[in-house]
Length: 479
Figure 1: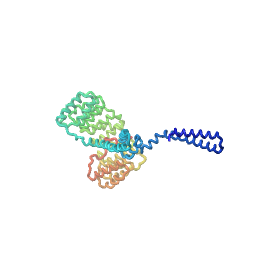
Figure 2 (figure 1 turned 180 degrees about the horizontal axis):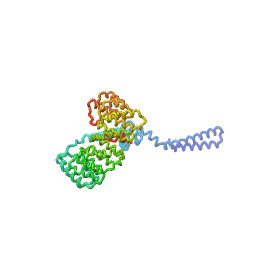
Figure 3 (figure 1 turned 90 degrees about the vertical axis):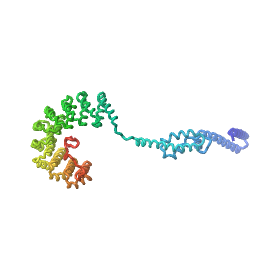
């Protein structure tokens, strides 16, 4: 029934009710009629409002009923239900294609299901292709081939031009590339480098050229190298000395001694240290012993310079300095660095008269444990044990066993290294324990290495740590 028909009937009913009231046919009848009128009005007022509410909420109801109707447009809430079945598919690959498929479907929900099911394999195929791409790229990297003679000649010509006309950075890179050339293909470049070194004005390039000459072992350039000892730039001069040291140029000894005589030993100087160390490694470097003995006796000179001289005596085997070294080694008033370096050289000289004094020093270090500064005690222990091991004294083995249990990890480390150098099978049991149970990983590693040495798996050339080699192993450099 239509709303207009209902309203007309209600009006008729209302008019009749009013007429009945005016007729005064009875109080009871009037009351009944009034009740009927009120009920009819309440029913009529409630019906339209309900329809309005339905219209207001029609959007939501349509969404909920669209699941069953076929004539209405497919709404977006259908999409999550379809995609929720595909949670295993990565979201990033799924979102974009799903939206496009839903927009194309306009009439049937079954079509949307088909479209989303069609999307699933495409979403999984995309990452599969991206994963396989890097594998193919890495598997197809060609192996590096050796250059042919024609290619080497061409590269050599390019390097030659770069060395002549390139910027400083380009020339430095060209020198680096030169190190990769074999000598038979780079003789012309070596000659060019020698000529450039004589006339080069760029200080940075001079230093790099000297390093390149050193790495290539071009000792035929000794005259140019030695002449650069007097270069006004300190960096160039130092690099020239280092190059002569590495190339073992005997001709460099006399110029170095003359240069050393000009130095002020009362000051701590890196240049002076470099010259002394170079002389201790050069053939014929012992010729500087007389001059350096004089400087060592002069106690007003800087203690670090005297310590470097002490190392020099041991390196060149200057037995004439034995008494001077003992005086410095066992004088408690002397700086710890000087004492340790003097002990080191006494071991290299295998000083028989110093051996009992070294054992006495070890005993005193045990008695005064905790009284001396920890670093000083550690350094003295390490260098004293090292000297006795180098001397080849078998009595030191018992001392090594004791020091291998020292609380100081560095002392244990050095003691175990010396056990490996001595190659005494009696140390294997202790070393096995240290390899598995020592609290220091470095000590464990040293113990394993010592076991290999004793069992003949490895031969170590150095019998004790050289204090000039690295600052990391030298406790005296830890300040």
